[in-house]
Length: 321
Ligand code: ATP
Ligand code: MG
Ligand code: MG
Image 1 (cartoon, helix red, strand yellow):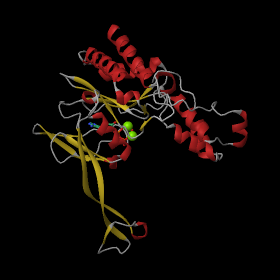
Image 2 (cartoon, helix red, strand yellow):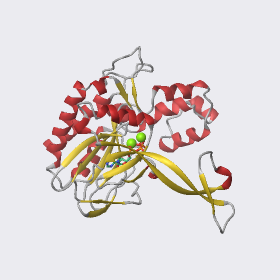
Image 3 (tube, protein in one colour):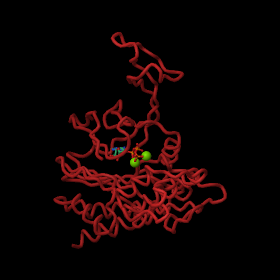
Image 4 (cartoon, helix red, strand yellow):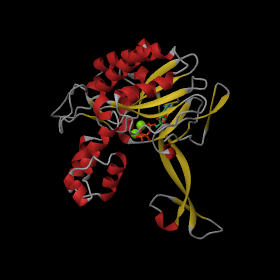
């Protein structure tokens, strides 16, 4: 689902509605200075940005400009208040209050800032989008989940086993592993999360865009009418791949749920790595992963380079046809 976040961004004296292709709408707001945005702080992501600003990957991630505390107001119910919040009773309704919460944000470069009427695509990279720890936690006390069974048969009625059909339920770890197979994540090492074309257009749901042919078609539509963008994307992806292979940050981290953000307009095209909320330092007993080996439970391989390689191959196919 594409959200058009309810804020306008001003850059080079132009105002434009900011585009957000994934994530919770409340996590983003306009930054205090032109060309910046704010994303709700997650300590893990902050730690990554601090390292990335001193890594050779720096040109391929949004510039990190520090942490900013902002007063957020939200309406809520009297019962729900937590310690540390400032409460303001609403004069008309005793049960509705306005809370002021101090939230910390990461101040980041707005990657859309240098573009005019940009086309934007978010591709989530890697062969899985959950952490090993999340899978391990789901396995602790696996209950049968009817809701997950229902979601499963909605997408693919033949997915549940005979036993799962009999009990009308699946466990959460089973569901997590299955979910990565309905998109191209498990096979191609990336999936399209969202696309926004320059003038409205395509905000399709890509959750079940799975085969190489389906993905190629989605990418082809994304660059349709912008032939100059294709060689630029190929070149940029190759530069990112070469830099990843030499990066101390990449060698020492498991990169999960992170995206490549593709942006082009009539003149330019660029790609940046975003979203490091689930990018973690590797455990001490496993100081390095290859990023292109098959994932087996416990080996921490994320398949990031499998995704980058397939993206390069597919854009090359598009360029050659
Ligand atoms: P999720 O974990 O669900 O993917 P999230 O809350 O971690 O979401 P991000 O993935 O970091 O958020 O970003 C969500 C969307 O916001 C992206 O798909 C992109 O459209 C936009 N976005 C994020 N960071 C930037 C940036 N620096 N410049 C421009 N757009 C951005
Ligand atoms: Mg994301
Ligand atoms: Mg995220």
